[in-house]
Image (cartoon, rainbow, N blue to C red; front, side, top):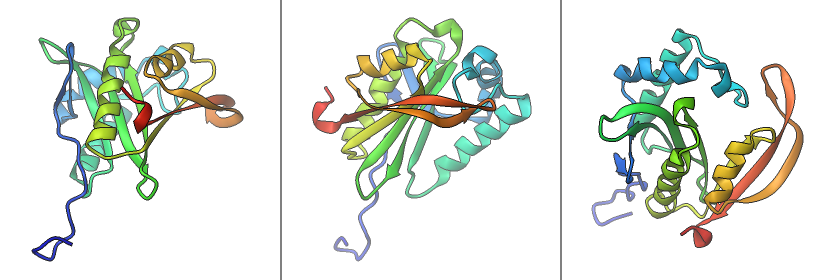
Length: 191
């Protein structure tokens, strides 16, 4: 409790976050066309539990992101990844608190295929790891990927995350049991 008899505010991420090439900001309803442009693609959804999305599903996803923005304390920070200088939405990324008592979070990211291979997923995710550790005060951040998704595994490894587990038949993706990797990084190992 503070001197006024109120509990201190929960830590929050200050948005937008700017990196050399990107601006990470809250999603807006007007992002629907850009979000649907990547979330409707088979190649984007291949290793994910969602998609490819219909237009209605993309709209529902944005509405969910906006609902999460209103939560207090906010524990889910799904953000639009926008490319400078035009600030066009090229994907989404997020960090969420999954265990407040043990200061553990989880990250994820998705980009339009036109922007794959340029280090943008790494840049966006590095910024969210920094915010998770330095603004939310997390001790540990985890990420999962389908074992077939070599590009996502490379992103996590470039960020200094360690592969802590390989799980067989752990997730249903598009009607089939898939194997996945668990990666994690501790605050003390993040630079």
